[in-house]
Image 1 (tube, helix red, strand yellow):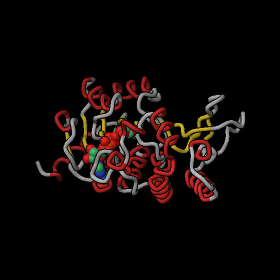
Image 2 (tube, rainbow, N blue to C red):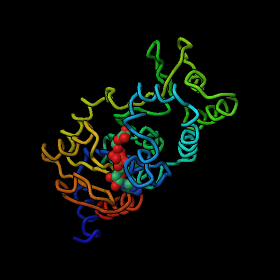
Image 3 (cartoon, rainbow, N blue to C red):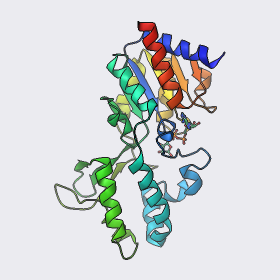
Image 4 (tube, rainbow, N blue to C red):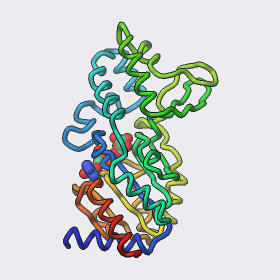
Length: 271
Ligand code: APR
């Protein structure tokens, strides 16, 4: 069926819904200049997830040769600093304002859904701009660009790169003054708020699955949970993915292209 028809089908589903959930992955932020993980040129092409994907692996790798990671680290900081919510993020924000979308469940740590105006965002892999204290478990929420600017400044002032010098790049805990780390989920660590994410998926009256390869669990279960509970599933992804076979509407476009078109079609139906 033509993409145009699929967009209309998606709009019909959404315009009749009022408790929609959106399950989002790295593809949603690709057009904000943040690389995905498994696409050509992605993060896992530059770094070996088996080596640095776990906390202990990353600590070992930095202990052995921290300098090796600095170029990639600077590239990452630049990408997260210059990123802005793109039309996919803003369309999701508008769908919430229209009373259609209730909850965004994201695997992204970039804070862009919140910056785009969504108010109920379940960040199952954490948030790169919230700092977790390694001693007292307190968390401090930072402003994205301010935090990156201070990390870049401290990085410039480092005379040598090692695990101990790199651990001074982040602000210390505001409660106990000890070392912090980004409050993100590394492989092998507990994902966040997953019971609520599953509950939202099961209760949704429609599910959007946008920009995710569907290979990382438990997040990859969510569209299937919604489908199993009777909700229609709308998939937005320019590439094949496991959700295509359960989709009620499949839009093989970039999210920044597809979501504004879907939003406009919903508005047209609601006129
Ligand atoms: N718009 C929509 N989808 C896109 C776009 C785009 N502009 N560009 C790429 N995609 C799709 C790709 O086709 C792919 O299916 O986004 C998906 C990105 O897949 P991954 O890189 O595997 O990202 P994601 O599914 O979010 O990965 C899940 O894996 O490495 C871990 O913790 C990391 O949260 C991450 C998790």
